[in-house]
Length: 465
Image (cartoon, one colour):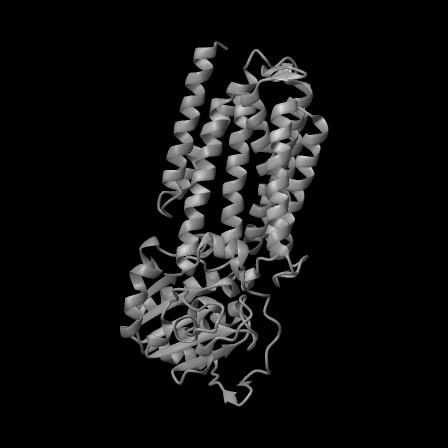
């Protein structure tokens, strides 16, 4: 394949990736966006395989078959609730790939066209240094995030005296050894740089609490993109440079959106993470001297059947119970009864951006019924019922009223303004941020204790009577 044709096909692939990101910005066009992304990736892979620089296909084919088989098994078996940790795990592989490519280029620069051993160009060494540092941080940071999301590592922030100073010292060490690599091409300095970056990935993420994990996943997505971009420079592959930059930029923008949704800065997340995995709280029905009003599925069905407007607020509890299909059935029955049913989505509902949108789309909930927080928040004041299914911190009024609360200042879905709030929850345990939800004790709140899917199915049964 000629160089000009290769460059043209890489350009076509890059355009497909850009259009893919555009398509993924809306649930209505997400399917086409995914298809365009796959087409672009297929073009990029085939163009690379057709390069005259490829002299043997045996290892490549084995790698494709192994990777494809592993990816297929994971895709078939993964649960929707496990998508956040899956994304974090995949980010770690991108970071590790950046480290491997940089190491290979350092030891065999001739194979990459960047010079000879001991005589690699300064620009290439800078690209390699940046790529390997970002890649190593992404690798271990993503593994820690995976561990926190999977429950292997506690979601409680891990902090110790001098933590920030340690991170600063490691960062300075990375800079120093990066300069040594560029000026001397020292292999020892390169591996010290790698080790320091691997440690920094751990020390950066372990102090971040569970409630901030959605932002961390998005941030690591950005890191993996920039690591891929660095690989692209090392490999002198324009498609990889463009793709990495797209992923890096989009991840950074998404991190900003997530932080805005939590009213926090990215620096506040990285250096002052909050949130724990909520431990079991008091017994059902009480919180110290305070009591809550609990009801049954029959009560909930009666209230909603006689309402004119119901706003449904899904959260991680819905994902855990896989209740989206039963929830959609409930919504369809209410619509048939003449009730105006809509779904309210908070930017950080679940444990990754778009988590609730994906689950509702899987259940074929009409896109027009699903509204973002900014679009629907003002409507809670006129709604007859706010039906909250496993969404805890994002509905907690303490974010507006309690300056001592760790979530104070975070924009929330103002469900407490509805005439009646129906809240499905297994128990009175705290949310992911590790604090109790003041909404439980409001006079207009009725708690529906139990499994979210079973509760929705029982409500459907009573609505059909």
